Image (tube, rainbow, N blue to C red):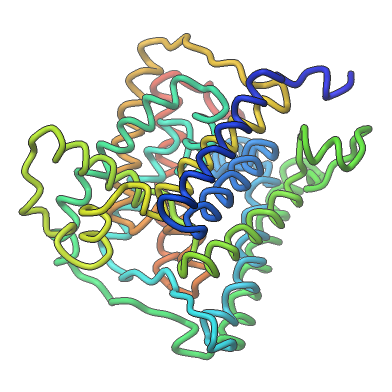
Length: 394
């Protein structure tokens, strides 16, 4: 069937019109930079939905079935993004201003990433996954997002106390070793990890699922209407992340915006946020006291949702489903709360904590990976206990 025939044309035209109008508004009211960041978010949303690129499902499939295509794609994304980031963050090009996503290697990240990994399995989506599935029309994920915001807001209140717990401080392998030796070491570790995942899959199944995929569609048709291969997604996500680093001055992040929205809403309802230390200095104070549309993360989050909505409409997949049972409702609430709270403690979700951290040469990103995956192991078991999934077959 011709892909064009399945495209939801009215919805597609409405979304494109909205994207153009909002981009022009941002350029007029703020700056061209704001409009461009929003459009980068659009590109990220299209990529994520067309490739169905998410951490939650990929990790669960690997744990349950030992199929590792999604996990291997994530490793390739970490490698490619590191190749793009390390020279810039290591000042190989001094004229380019870019800041690494550095965070303390401590109890806060350890606990926060574990809680996030558990929560994303119950919620059914990670940070990026929640946004692009909301854009794709999944009504249950709106509940996850709402409580993701609540959890992130509570996390901003509690974070200062968590930061008093033991920590090794911020550790950058780029600063310690120099960007080239650090990059070589990181690529060696990622290569080893890639082949470990590949070996586990081959041992279980006797073969390995390829990251590419044949299709009878033309390149242009597949590019516009989908689906994308995981390899396409890896390249696109790495390039959009690089564009974010160059334009915003920092890597792609997601969950700071959630805490900002929740805090602003609480203040608008009459809540007192003056004693919340997280919002009293630096960029956080500036963001809280300014327009929400001046915040980079917010604009890109909005862009991801609209970009995913556009991709879903182009693919003829935009079909909101309002059927939610009680178990789904409760796990959406619990999962959202855990992800929001965990992401704030861990200095980001799978994007701002894991991807941005590791690609910036920060050791907290590796701690995030280990703790987050451990949380996923627990979350997968809880899904079985709550009868969301069937028991794992031997």
